[in-house]
Length: 118
Image 1 (cartoon, rainbow, N blue to C red):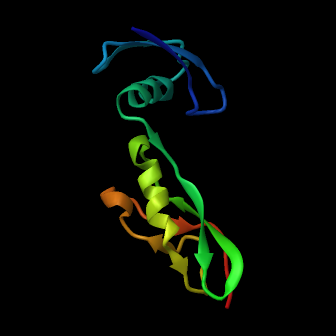
Image 2: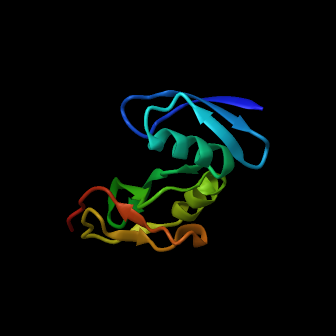
């Protein structure tokens, strides 16, 4: 089957056409660089996403923005959000501090993307 995708690997946004047999991508056309071909193969066989969320901070009503340090499998996004639901960060928090290690056994940490002082 043919699948049409728009590459998000760089600002060009190439329109890709990928031939997918249900298990693997056999051909990718329309990409102007290797990133597009790699993106199409991953998106159709094992899609991944960065996850961004907010967690509570002890002693304040202001939430702390966090994100996964790397993309995780798309099928785990809601499990990741559920794991973050019970997290409460303790100030001080600095950008890059690990808020949750190895989320959903992915090997990926969730890190702070903002600062919170005491």
